Length: 340
Image 1 (cartoon, rainbow, N blue to C red):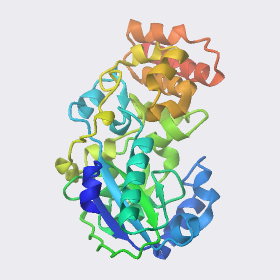
Image 2: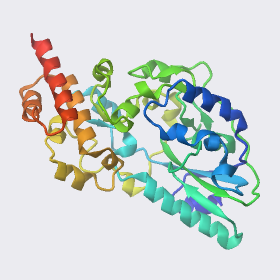
Image 3: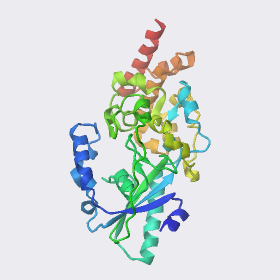
């Protein structure tokens, strides 16, 4: 199976059983603390997330795969260090991975079925699945203190996907954790969202604030977002294991529309039609033009108050969206307070 997976562009494959009962107390505590914020879907299915055989009756094993995405040419730190540039999480610079990986997983599952007929379903962040837990149990890596999967040979810059199958496949051995006393990810989080090792309060996470949150971004957190307009990679950028990160080989994950070097001003000047056209097929498309504009307004409020930045904000002070208008007003007031 690993050879077939490699032929389809996957970097690795491993198999786990479906007993995730030991993960249920942690999931229950995380939900009870409200760390999921407005992500109601995290709680909607209860403990089904930790019970693969309830999600897909008859499931005996989960085949987990990973696919590298780190873009070769994108200098993440240079973008973060320039407050006039827009920072987009590296996974979202190219085309949306969901459909691509799901299609590849479907082909892999069908190829397995040609040799050993089986009932299966494939998932790529598309159902209540504890993908990191399953991948770590299968030996694709271990859960880092930032809660992402880490691999000694590849760091953390990869996507995960799963095949739920009723085949009694041999199970791979899990890998021991290798974070030790390191706390680089906790110390690097701009908003302090990693409240303890292995515990993230999504309500403070920039990825949540810029992607999942539909309403206004809390004012106290806006200055901490900096120029990050879609997601955040800080906890990964400082992780020592990402010295071994492997560049993604999939052409569809390469940066599109200069998202790896564009300025905040030029992106804020896009019309809704331009946003829809250019972000079609991108993970960014799903947040919509309103939240995209909201995020850019916050980043422009954190940028240097150049004439270009102020003109861009003033041009949308009367934006049709109340949400955008409020964030533009905040950004202009922030610049006014600096100047005065």
